[in-house]
Image 1: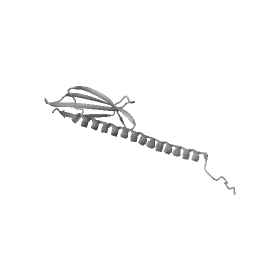
Image 2: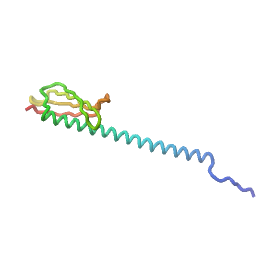
Image 3: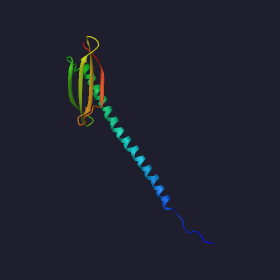
Image 4: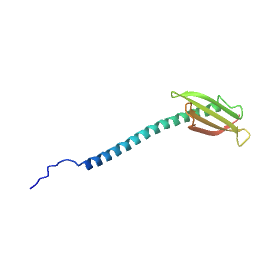
Amino acid sequence: MKQNLSKGFSLLEVAIALLILSTSVIAIYQVISSSTISTFELEDRYIAREIGNNRVALMNTIDIPKGIGTREGVIDMAGFEWEWKEKIDKGPAINIYEYTILIKKKSSSNYIYEARGYLVKK
């Protein structure tokens, strides 16, 4: 009549439980960090798109291109400096120009937004 008085978990059970817990915590951390990074990237793309839309509106109204060529500049928006570069080329018809606008953060080396379209010379 020998009774086994050991109660509780074995070392192997504790090790497996810690492995499962640590894997779950790492997976949750990666999801949260990638979501945060994606949110910042999405915000940057949105701001760059708005800058591109502003440049298109200016090209159609106040800052009309004189002809083919390139222009560039810097603008402050949402607390950051953004660089824009416009390229104006001949379009498919006589009075039509094709434009390309590239936008990036001043501190970045990669453009994050590109807008393309056509302008009608009046």
